[in-house]
Image (cartoon, rainbow, N blue to C red; front, side, top):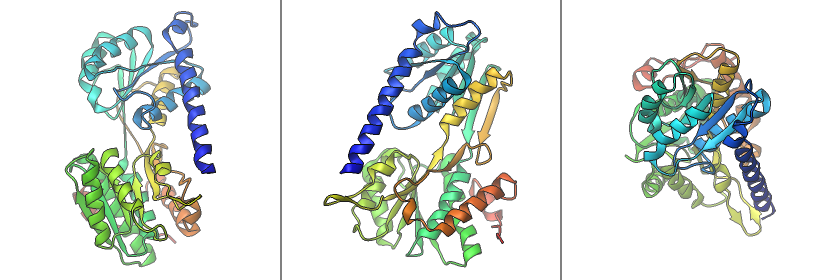
Length: 363
């Protein structure tokens, strides 16, 4: 219970901290700003700040720019999707740089960007070809590769699972990056492993996520990587939390906030976290890089894909499970990341590339 109270206090402090910066970065301050000081506005999607997801992570990057680059910052939070275009126009008219995240804002940006040619737009996880728009995406296959290595080491049954939502390009990258990590661990350690893969056909259906996870657990799977979205992953987490507390069933998800939610109370004590780790897309770094490029006069429109080398994707710090993770796999992960950065490992992002993939052997 003490840990829960501590985390709640931290969350409250974080909320207050962010709220203060929203006020400081408001448009009234912009009107008094030094003309040489860059003005940056984040336009969230309808979920707004406090979503414990893309908006919050992107805002972290804007705050990083506030601290380190001394820019003025603000945020606009449209209440409805049909307000995206109007909100982007407001931001573009007041700021030098507008940061936004998510493909749902793509059509609005397509209409707004050409009309505000002097404003720079930093668009994360979307694509718009305009001379004043820089786009960022992530090499999700590299994060999934690391997750596969960890899952392979931690599995006690020799069966690991993957749950996708819809079989699109990104989900394929998650699956085959994950599979590549598993066979790389197999080659280096000579451990027999089987991958059970399932798709829910949805990204937000909690019940389907739970149903598929329970089916995999019945087949002997003890580590499941959920790449279907927060809704389905909530069902996955619920499924592993229902397993006996003394058994080592784990979920790997895409949102580090879920790691706290998967702690299990046993009387007055807290059991091992049920989310082993998360594959973290660094929205904060994408936002920061985009803002920094404007300040340094290095703004380059087009798509930039961030991977391990660019600190764009990684596993979480495993705050609630690190004490249960053997040192040997942590050292192995560190070596693998160095190999990726050196260009010695090219992680597959689809089935065709996976068929040609040859796992490296580390000395």
